[in-house]
Length: 388
Image 1 (cartoon, one colour):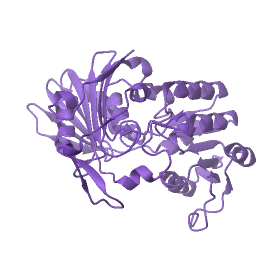
Image 2 (cartoon, helix red, strand yellow; image 1 turned 90 degrees about the vertical axis):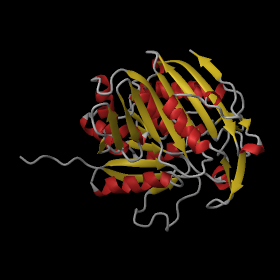
Image 3 (spheres, one colour; image 1 turned 180 degrees about the vertical axis):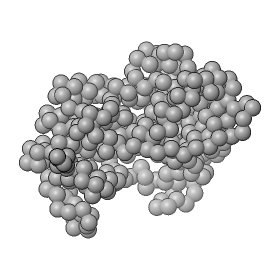
Image 4 (cartoon, helix red, strand yellow; image 1 turned 120 degrees about the horizontal axis):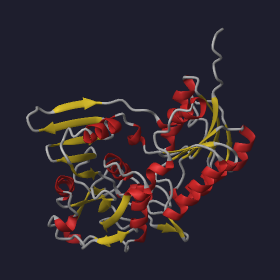
């Protein structure tokens, strides 16, 4: 008897422009594999024919609840402004739709817990969109650390030096905001554009859950005329006493691949998480570089729903990341960097601001596990700490 081929799961995408375009194209890829069917698109302004070229004619609505009801979608992909994540996730959960929820999952710990409680009560699955945690390098690095390949774990440092111009902070009303119309947004360098650096560093330290964090220190600054931080660092001390630092900027001189360094007593492991590339360096051995595969998070969610595959990024494994979001949310407003320490240069679409020496400083932070104020930056602030 031949096996019955399962029907493609109907999927609704909430937020199909901007970063959501990547989800739209990925849904198309999985559709061609026979795994899903794009049943609906939720946007305030419907996609036009050019935007839907090669995609088909999904049902469209600005009301996610209505769209879920009319399409009978089994999965909802939510890629909307940060402050809308919880309500839309709960709308999908109440309709029985499983979720792929973009990062950051919520703008506050309270909203995150409201979301996770509601999803659990509804009995649906939820995957958080940290694509880097789908990398096969993550369990491999954790195996090497557990087996003592680099000796005793000393700490984990992450570095993200990106270039963003002033147009980036005007791309949407919530961009570069800490709050909007009374609602938390927390769209800072650490919590949104370079959130993967934070989540990946915590995962490699074996500290993904809320209870894995004992202490957090933040230093939040901004060169651009925005509310949120664009040049920041954080140090997390885990429940096991491991130090995890992340230094991030959107004001680099030159854009670089973000990475995480796992420091041990006998070596180190560097992970360029966007490339799935790993470099192992240890005494008595030559450098060993490997490139790993990656599991697509929506494909994994489909496998979980249809075959019971374990989720790559269930919400509970992002609780420690949300502790960092909460520390950033509660920290004093990001301090403006004095004009003497940044300059303006032409950007791709608008002028951009470059913080002098920040590229090297971000790397030093990952190397030394230090905060900007500890590394001699003349503009750095003393730390703001959040204890459990």
